[in-house]
Length: 101
Figure: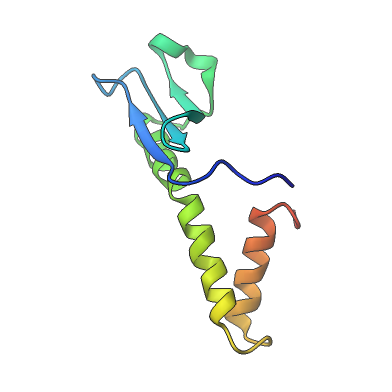
């Protein structure tokens, strides 16, 4: 699986905060996902059930690279291969990296 767009990912929105919002990665050079109406059209990306949900989803997605890095740190610092927490964290990292569905 190819690597994801490098962090940081940030949430951006239209100046009036009603037309569109999305997530940019790699220092604003890449739009990862775009939600909205107006300038980019309704079909431009993933929609939340409400604008608030779409914005909450965007914030969660924007922090995903940081969470993945933190989970890898947990795995690297766990000294017990039978630790239930570490097994769970490994499974989540595997899923995030496309090794498990």
